[in-house]
Image 1 (tube, rainbow, N blue to C red):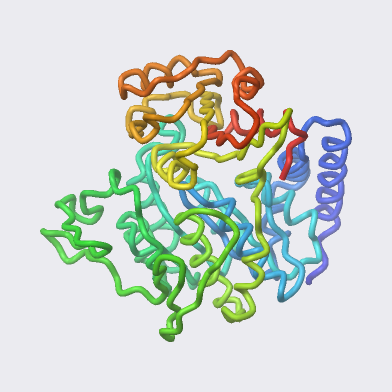
Image 2 (cartoon, rainbow, N blue to C red; image 1 turned 120 degrees about the vertical axis):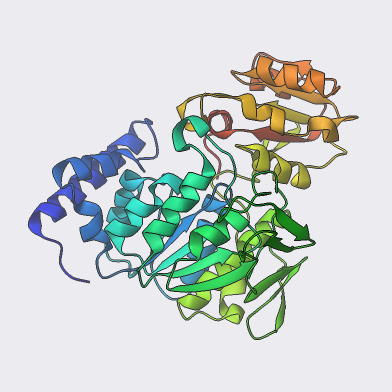
Amino acid sequence: MTQLPLRAQLASALGRSAATLSRMTGRGDGSVIGGRVGLMLEPDLLRKLARDRKLALVSATNGKTTTTRLITSALLELGEVATNAFGANMPAGHVSALSQHKGAPYGVLEVDEKYLPEVLDTTGAGVVCLMNLSRDQMDRAAEIWLLAQKWRRALSGRPTHVIANCDDPLVTWGASTAAQVTWVAGGQRWKEDSWCCPECGGPLDRKDADWACRECTFHRPEPHWVLDDDAVLDPRGQRWLLDIQLPGLANRSNAVMALAVAETFGLPVDRALPRLREVTSVAGRYTTVQRDGRHARLLLAKNPAGWLEAFDVSDPRQPIILSVNAQGPDGRDTSWLWDVDYRILRGRPVFVTGERRLDLALRLDVADVPFALCESFSEALAMQPPGPVDVIANYTAFQQIRSEFGRAV
């Protein structure tokens, strides 16, 4: 790789020192502060750190962190990979990740949906992976149609190779201006945000996985990769059993996207897939933590689509703890709780906690789901009998729970 200019070297080194100090003092994992320090000293540091690397950017409403981890695991077969493993998905996090692995020839960066155009312009990444778009943090990111439009503009006229989920109409529209697109039929369980055509506003007709606009020519592209339950069909028609350790349909979709990205880096399925099967937990997601004979499995859900997937993974035979906050990273508005169908929890022992537990309690009451209201996660866990319990929490609630257990990963 090309040697960094002296100013960039100094900014990168001081950023790494700040990150190390943050970890040593217990203030955080250093994945943001290091990048902020570096960017203060050299505002163009991200561009300089990205130069000469083969980069993939991963963006979506849900599944970014997991898919980034899966792609990274696969590309380690080729060499060292720089990545923001803990979800610091804005430019400061990207600077920190690339600084920590300054000699890595490959980079896989999770990117916040809103920041994708800026990060793509700055890094010139050769590969972009786009998976899904649904309502999330409306107070910060605005309407998802606007995000898809920003993606279209950012990709237009660039040589970037896009890997995109053609089952999501908004993603398809956002990706369709790219010079080269590999379409993946990764599935779309949450359809409530894509019943209208983003091209003309007309109604979308859906039949099974297929979709098409009734009033214009916008339609689902022919996929190159297809998720078929627990297997994937590659572009040559060969069927591969996924057999990954991460649970649920959403993670099998993430795995197919990861395999498609890996192939753009020249890594065939037979070499990438075994690497994907080694991943058992992602930044605490799906981890089981233990306390006094209780085995709590941690699941993250940040928006209606994420809750749908969490319910799919959750075991209906077990009690469940739900925790909701509304801090800045979560989005201050909790009205999205009314878009989640909580009736699936009827018949299970349900325990509600978190800073916005009363908002969630009202929603469950309207859904006729009995629950116990708890002041804290520790209280909710203490109310469980010995044995397994599922925990579903949104972002900051999830991080608080992780912190109670030493941020288990």
